[in-house]
Structure formats: structure tokens, C-alpha cells
Image 1 (cartoon, one colour):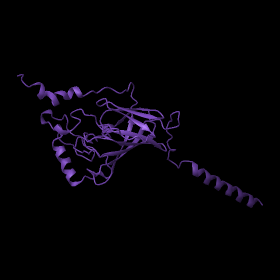
Image 2 (image 1 turned 180 degrees about the vertical axis):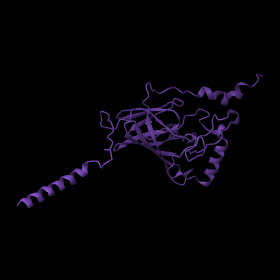
Image 3 (image 1 turned 90 degrees about the horizontal axis):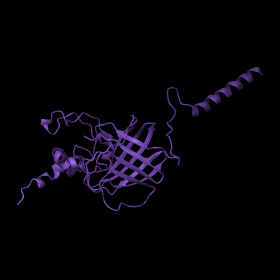
Image 4 (image 1 turned 45 degrees about the vertical axis):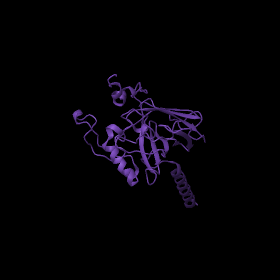
Length: 272
């Protein structure tokens, strides 16, 4: 009797351990992150965010190299950086790759950033400036420091883009705890980086924002443009919440700095 009783206790203990193993984290493993939530139960993305990489120079792996103006010394030189492209390959069509290389050789005169054009999507996300997310159940506002750019994400909307624009037309929905943003209506006046990577007016971007910690989230963007690329391709990177004291979105209105470059030859013509 005593032996049967001991066996019953051991069996019960084994069952308890097995049940506990289904919900307790394994040794050295933290419990799954539970994001803070807004009153409507969605993950709270509100705040000031910034990428910490060199993708604005070049989306792909790149070595350090001399800047475009030798007289400036190290200013505008390109730092070494790891790429953010999945597989480190951008699948250009042959004729489009030739144009990309031509863009890179003429960066100082062709890059829309030099002219302070709005940055477009996804470039606005990983430029070296912060951006702010303001979230409501029906709209998500994204405001960028560079060129005072902004866009509105219309949640659960089926409305099509009324016109093509630099920042496109953004429609969003939630897939679990991930904000998915479908961006269409983009014009062909923006680039992806300073290395000449470009697109056409057929660009279609699907973004995914997923909180992975209290102050960081994963950003992914799938890029499709049949006029320029042979297949869709993806970029991904972490974004970090600015928690420094007094952090706020500044104003970088760069248009006035580009006026001389773009229109100086018109103002210097001698009067008749």
C-alpha cells in the first residue's frame, strides 16, 4: 500500500512538472514581451523613434569611402555599414541597374535629398533624423523631422490614392500586434538612399511595425516595382524610441538651403 501511494505521488509530481513546463519560460529565457497598449487595446507606438544605421548612405553592405567633395576632407565621407536588404541583393532589371550606377556617379546633382525634396517611403524611416508617431483608433500620424515631412495612415480604409505624391497614400490595419501599412500612390521623384538606388511610379511598399521591447521595435518593408525590379525584396531594421530628456521633434526646413543650388543661376542673370 505504501509503495502504491509513493508511486501515485511521483506520478502526480511528474504531471505537475509537465504542466508547468508548458507555461513557464525555460532557464535563461525571459517571458515573451507584452507591449503597452492604448485604450482600444492596440500596441502603443506613440513616441519619438529613430533608426541607428547607415542605410541612408547605402541600403546594402558598404565599405567606408571618400565623400563626393575632396576639398571637404572627411566631411560627407561614407562610413562602413551593414546593409538592411534581405540577402543583401536588390534585384534590378539590367537596364535599371545601369541607371542606378549612373545615379551613384552623379549623386551630388541627382539625389532628391540634395534638393530637399520630400523623402518618400521607406527612406523617411531610416534617414538620420527622428520621426514621431501619434496613434488613434482611426488614424496614425507620422511626422518626420527632415523637411517637415508627414503622412497620415488611414486605418481600415479602402480608399485609393487620389494622386501620386512624394509620401504616397498609406492605408493601415493590425495583424495581431503588428501595424501593417500599405503604401501606394508614390511618384518617381524619390530615391532609397544616397547610393543611387531608385524606383519608378509603380512603387508599392508594405510596411510592418512590431514592438519588440519597451523602447524598440522591428521595422520591415517589402518593396515591389515591376518596372525596375525583377521581384519584390525586403528591408528590415530595429527602430529605437528616443528617451533622452527633452527629446522632441525639431524643425529641419531645408528648402531655403537648396534655393541657391536650384535657382541661383536664375537670380544672377544680368538685367536687360
